[in-house]
Length: 172
Image (cartoon, rainbow, N blue to C red; front, side):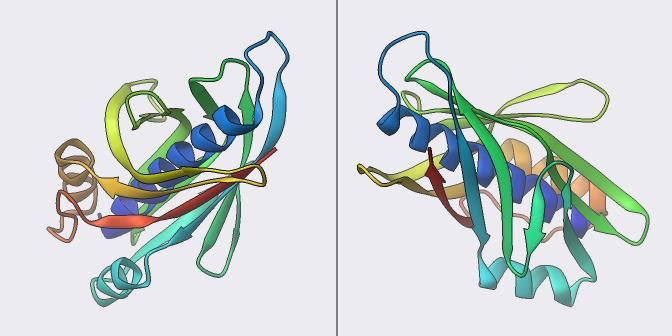
């Protein structure tokens, strides 16, 4: 369950950050911008998950490196940044996979999909969004919806509304 939480949080973070980066870099045209979003997981959250034997893993084509998960990102419209791949939050063989993060820069929310096709709206909140020429950055916060999902998937109670999943940085 803990791993599912981590995965969901990471995925949400990546989606949020990715969408922010695209909005800053993309013109309001039909052109598609390709780039990547790197989510650096909160060390505080990772410590809590580790204490409960919950792990977070990247789901292809996303890649993990230390506390970072990097997702391919695209932006066709200035409002949205979409990502492929995902993050798994696991405890033993139990957990969940959060896929295809979609950052909504206008509403400052992140939508994710589950492996069964279910779409979870408002899975994460984007906070402190900063759009600069080089990159878009934001903090990913766990919502009540994702906290409940991750806690149920890992049979734990580690995830809480308002916890920081991590920080994201999207570059195109």
